[in-house]
Length: 280
Image: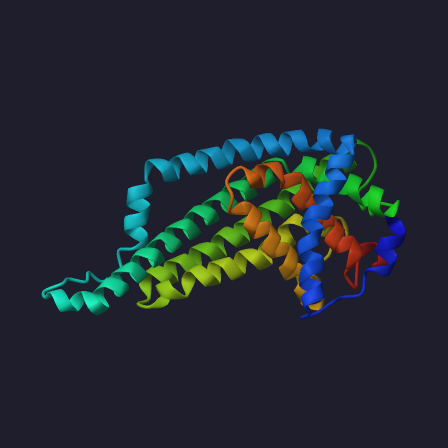
């Protein structure tokens, strides 16, 4: 597989093949995890953390489903029928609003599941980083390791991993909250907010699942943006696959190791233009 990573690093921007390549990284990551028992052991703690927090999030939504649905649809106008013939246009309008209301509710559920999974990733960040390191060793035969040796280096690496994941999760939750708030406050923005949330998630998830290998290269945020733009189609393909997984409760837990593995492969196959190891 190491030889493949050297020949597949040309960015594919805006092409269908690039999207397909990115989408397939999830399945390639899943196949690699299934083949390697050493990756199973590194997946136990992240899976347990995700299971606990996602179950908690879904439990909250189950207990307050009516309130959440009412909040998401409070802006919708009440369409009253005063004569039978008004059903010709009010009937389809009511159906459309009903479908839109449930779409908004499902977007809120999916976003909460994603958020719960990301919080679990913060807790399990050292184990996910170890998983990413092992995948990098398997894929390329080498590992970019920038920390010091010994206990001090180990503590520093763990702290770096947790802080990096916490920063990514904080950014996502803040951006999600801003879009959600604007969608509630601004009239008519409710039609745009769900799609903006989906677009944000599709772009963010690849940056999160590939964040461990990018952190090891000490890649600054500006360089990460340049890397994203240079490989936009591939990143969007992987992000779409990740979003579809996160929208299925339970599936996102089982496939968490495959998502981190796919994110690591994404960086190895399409390496950023600059890394800390190259700059030294």
